[in-house]
Length: 147
Length: 136
Image (cartoon, rainbow over all chains, first blue to last red; front, side, top):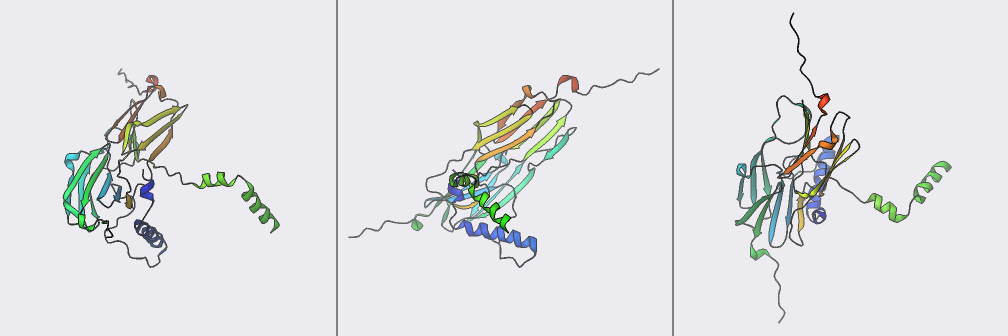
């Protein structure tokens, strides 16, 4: 399922660059420029973005979220998703691990230029928020007939 | 020098190429973030496993080992190309060892919106008892 998602097209270079950036950040060499909106590894929530010629899909892995706290907006090709995840600490309990994210989050995601902000759909299921954005028809590949 | 050579040979000889390939195949497993806390009656484990539905989740207790596994399922259109991916696998797995005072047979688990909560009660006799201090 995500086999397709690990099969990178253009994204590979971003990923490689991010890795390199992190490595070089550790060892103090001059880093390559990072994407201006790229975020540090481990930022909540994790996201995947996939595209077909017809649409762009954004998946946010936000388990246990109240969809009412969500605010999704799309301005041209900049998608903003904010919300709040509650994983409160129980009082009178002794914690061994507290790894789950708790609190408000906000992510800004740059999408391809040809997305249509008027045709967006979002679903929340099993802890995954899916946002489907249609692309404009003019940019889809068209079959050209030879007469 | 000779020793290094023979070592290298040994490494090459062990296992058929097929086996080696299988070993090298990236079996990427997601390690779900967890909260684990204890109160007077037992231990609670909460795990974030977005994309996992109830029928794709397994919780096993083998002796003192608690294993949590799940398969995430996200419907994606055919021919989708990845532009970006934080999540590189659909398989969640994490295990913990339990200790003897926990009642492994009485584990209770529930799943809601991708959040798993597992409750492991303590044996009745090890629950803390209030000790009364008598006055004179």
